[in-house]
Amino acid sequence: MVLTRQDIPTVPAEARELFRQGKWTQRTSGLCVGYANANLCIVPRDLAFDFLLYCQRNPKPCPVLEVLDPGDPIVKSLAAGADIRTDLPRYRVLVRGEVVDEPTDITQYWRDDLVTFLYGCSGTFEGALEGAGILPRWRQGEESGAGLYRTNIPTVPAGNFRGNMVVSMRPIPSHQVSRAVEATSRFPGHHGAPVHIGDPAAIGIPDMSKAEWAPGPTLQPGEVPVFWACGVTLQAVAQESKPEFMLTHYPGRMFISDIPSEQQAVL
Image 1 (cartoon, rainbow, N blue to C red):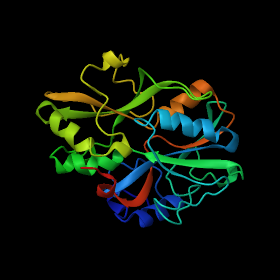
Image 2 (image 1 turned 90 degrees about the horizontal axis):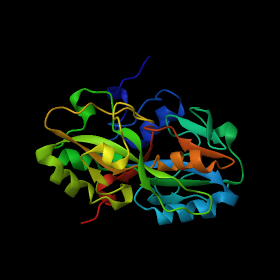
Image 3 (image 1 turned 60 degrees about the horizontal axis):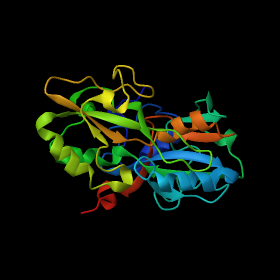
Image 4 (image 1 turned 90 degrees about the vertical axis):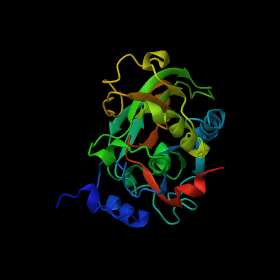
């Protein structure tokens, strides 16, 4: 039986069970709305300090929510008891910056020296956008989520980790842009307010039809492209800095936590 989005439970633990069983490997946008989402990055212990320092210096794209002990795959605070090796729809395995596998389970790649980082995701504030009257495209019948693009915005390096920021793009009706800024600025732990509004070429995106990681929705008349910092920045950084080994979520296939999104909001 092929599942549709309507078949996925709205309770995060139940949705993660389907991911664990390999029954859903598609985008998580629109699933368990109202619960915090997280990006995932896992590195060897000898890279963990520089990696954490990189995140600390770049909180806009890399806002850390939880760090696990070396060799421990079990989440503690975001979703107690969840297994980071199995509870996402799909992963990426990178060796020296190159993607070598995209499995639905990373148990076979697990090592005792691996340190897990979970950091904020803009999927967390989509409920707030809806509350402001801004409907994401998946609510309007489109399958596409936010488009993901590499920019010319530099990040602050740490150790060997360096590279430019990746952003997510959501088309926003021009008369609602200020509402979008206000709604998302309440979630600094999930990228917060946009980093750019308007002309994509100004941040090094020459053609929005050519998203490097995930294709985005097409702009409709009266809409403005609005860009938020994105956690896929760390995958772009891996391509440039070429760490020996890294495990990540597959873009658009996020970790869904048990934490209500509003608990992550400020103001």
